[in-house]
Image (cartoon, rainbow, N blue to C red; front, side):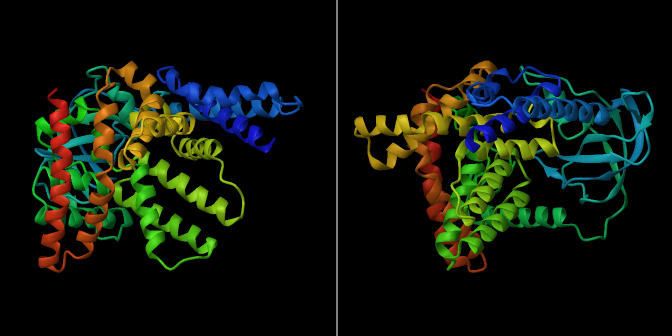
Length: 443
């Protein structure tokens, strides 16, 4: 009974947030929400219906008002303004992306009153700017436009961005001298990336940085095209699966047997990895679910998978109601997990009947189940890759050892002889993985 009630209330919250955000673009994803939500019809008592409707209406109003309050309108054209850098600089191959908050009200809110706002600034690649710096920007402000069927304006609105400043001239007014955890973790991530780059050549180095930190370092065009063609782009972005794997390694190495201490370890490690990687949707989802499961197990109760994923989604949507309709990573992450819950056991039995090798059976069932879960979304966006059902199992078994070698390499980067050996081993594994991907992409 508690299982049903938890499913219904959490589904009502997620459904209300989605519809209240003003978009029906995520209809295929709502299948996973509506399925448990409709179980309220089987409740022996109808006294919960009023509460369910109340939760739905509250979440609908909450997401709708949140979007209205955050809305900003910028006047396109030449602009000159001062701003504060509110996120670590995102270094790309040819430029640096800066997320800034204007110091003066150069935008208007939904009610026409002057307001400050966030702007995505594309500046010089080698500009010495840090998180928290005050800068002056001269550029042409533009409204973001959709491209290739991707709703880029809605994606930026997720972070409160309503204007972009391409080819901006930026000068630093004052540098922040205050300690910032966000800035410190970003600098630590860049230090780790430099260590990886010292011992693992490209493009395998970028591949490894993607596995470990979700790094956006440049990847050659031919590799990027092969990743898209084979449906393996998710490999170069740290995901919930990476979080689970890393946490499992830590628990096996640490002499911690008490469940309470294990839960604390999981929460701290998951939080640290999430912050270090930049808090992407898939990583946050994995961290939230891993932490909740650890807490439930520590209390001696059973960890229910489906309520767990809905609770994780609800917590994330509480902080950012636009995630469900604007962030493809959020949608794909939860849809994939839903696919694992519904089809994982079926495909595991199928792999046993097919007598697949042990190293391939797990990857086959997990990849197939996740692909079935995300199929409605990938088919809708035109990014479904049928060959990924074959390529993913061939590659996924190589990822855990490469990830483990990457972390060991970071731990011994102070000892070059050993780090060199570890770098060669990691390079060999990732080179083989990329060869499989490129070969599959060329078929």
